[in-house]
Amino acid sequence: MTNDQPPADGQVAESVAEFLASFSYGSRTDLNFKFLKSLDDEAAKEFIRQLFDAVGTAYDTGQLDAIVESAVAAQIAGYTPNPDKRGKTILHDDGPFHRPTKPLNESRVGLLTTSGHFVNGDVPRPLVASSMPQDEPIDRIGDFIGSESTLSEIPSGTATDNLRVRHGGYDITSAAIDPNVCFPIDVLRTMESDGTIGSRAPTFFSFPGATAQGKLRKVAPSWVDRIRDEHVDVLLLVPV
Amino acid sequence: MSVGHIARGAEEAGIATVTVMIEAFEHRAREARFARTLSTHFPMGRPLGAVHDRERQRAVLESAFNLLETATEAPTIERFGQRWRNGVTA
Image (tube, rainbow over all chains, first blue to last red; front, top):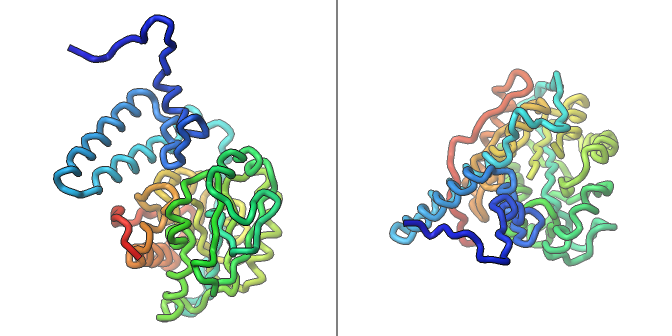
């Protein structure tokens, strides 16, 4: 016996593909699960089955590990491209590689993330208001992608409760509660204090990564120049 | 990838770079030939770990910075050896 039923007369069934796509800037937008649109129907069904199984187990164990693992595994499957559908991906034949000239505990470390953090009051216009719930950048994701991104300068002594974040490409819930999940300002300060790193750069940087590659290629040289002004030996990059 | 142009420019300018990203994006580090990458088996938006988990966040950075000593060519990609654990109350 099965409870799978066709739609009643006059009703149009939502396809599995339409359901999955609705989580990515659609009627059910959830940036934690926007990768669902990239899963084929069977992979998505198996993910949901595994997720429910893990939830059922958690009722008894209280352990969330299996739930998170099923989501992370599906996320990897969703974002890893099909080699037959490479699209416009830019492939590089070589990668520049600079060997550090001094040990880490003598190096000045810089930070640049795509988390979209900024200092409260230093509003990265024109796309951001002083207060920004996530709905706005989600609704304006096309504007973000098509606009030249603003590189926010964040003094590395800034208190984390004085940081704000806006981004239309990932779920910012954790990044707003604790910036260190993707903008490790406190962790680097601790590593400086205990001598693990030589020093931190006076200024850290962040911008919203949901920006067209062409726009980023255009601004990259000036941003690198700005980073060089910090006289860093090492640059930690965190794409989110 | 969003930091690819910056990473290449920094390396060419004599700044050693190390990138931390979630495993789901690892293919991009390979395609863009990032110098040094540590990938984490974590949910999107939390590449360094859960909220207020300073111990795990630091462990990620220590693993990443270790690549400054061990990597000899681009792209060097390693996976962080610890799985996700839940956030902690501040």
